Length: 293
Length: 93
Image 1: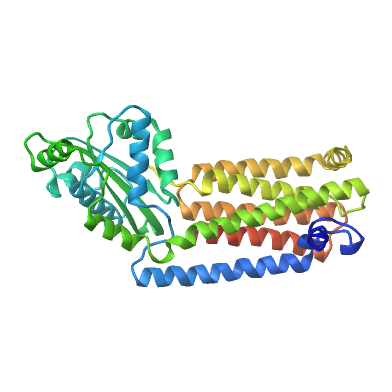
Image 2: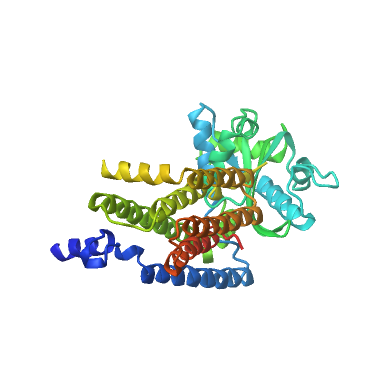
């Protein structure tokens, strides 16, 4: 215990033992961080190349099960019934995502005028009401639902009582020249008398849990969640750890140096702190977020 | 107490320098907000801000007559570590 605290002091607290600068902020330690960051860049590029070759997708942790669960949580909080997962709507969502990648657009309507409803009709789903939410470049399922919930128009779709079914697609590809993860959410309520309406009625009568995902959908999901997926949150965590270490060591350095009235080269620590806090704010508020439409 | 005193002393001695740095930080955050979900634009914003920070350090220490290779390296390394890790974390390239 004593040696641990001595070690921590050596790493963080400026004093005689470390030439009045915490070891974590000394030049050799900074060089080690740079080497680690560079190695991480090289490794992550290799991982993403392997992932692309194996069609495993990009390093995100967006899962259809979670999207469905969180959508229904939002509805439950507002006193609405849960949506059931529909294969045809999921198929329509997937077709829409692929269409956006192939035709290079990010919009509800394609440049040629294809509407979301065309994709739903082509999947064989006969609807009375239908809706679509889009998202891109998010890392986590929860962030996608949170962003939709904060936007009035997307929230309207999430909370529309006319909708009884939903389908999702999470697709990776190149959009407008950059690697992109698209999330498409298609809502619907089946036309009375259609096969989907009858299936929905039957499941309601059976009193079954209505948020189940079929075996086929689950296996598709399984394909998306293998490979690099686990890697993404870890990489974000590494960034947060580095930012945390920098902020703690710089703040301690500033505090101890001012207490000991150490003569320092002007402003370095305050400037570094300002810079890293700004980056931390940017990362937390904006870089970890995607765009919605 | 010592901390606030020394921070205040440093800030009041170089008000213009810190005003420029804080303004650039606010502009950086506004641009990141504007380009939310756009990887290329976010990367460019990050690159410009980190380059600006290194330049700021050079100018600040030149004015203070404390420009030393160790200082320059420190600004460059801290900026690059943050830049590279952000690129890796958010797949910006």
